[in-house]
Length: 171
Image 1 (cartoon, one colour):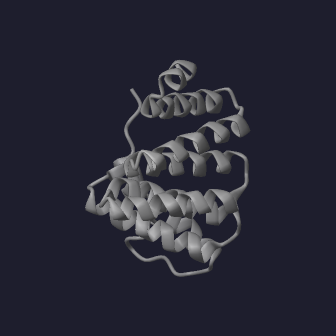
Image 2 (cartoon, one colour):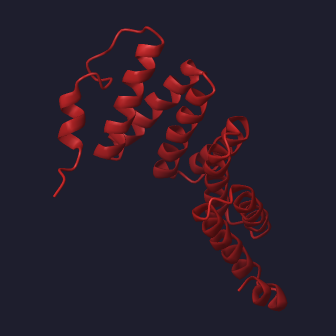
């Protein structure tokens, strides 16, 4: 598909092909190759002025660099995703970006920043009535507060009943 898209000058199809190739390489564990295709996706999305696809490409790149354990680069892409999501008023995208930023900062030992993004993720999850997002955010906040020796607040996720109540029961 990529060669056909290029042959016909179809930039949107070329962008989709690169995105699909990036996804395929992720599943094969070829993260560097995936990053290459996601960067092409990002470049074409910018050329096509498609901000939603640009946000998705940044999210994919952030996740890919997380898999590569290059957390600084992951943070750069997740911040770009967050800014675009805010511009597009995409609260789901903002929540995903905050969750990803919290995890990347935690991996680097930046626990205060991680707590900031986990708290923002909780706020957005509540607004969207996303019970799984809330449970995840509460667990992250609880873990981070323990690391930082901060007192638990009743709504921070220390109450495991809240977490198990929102976790789907196995069949």
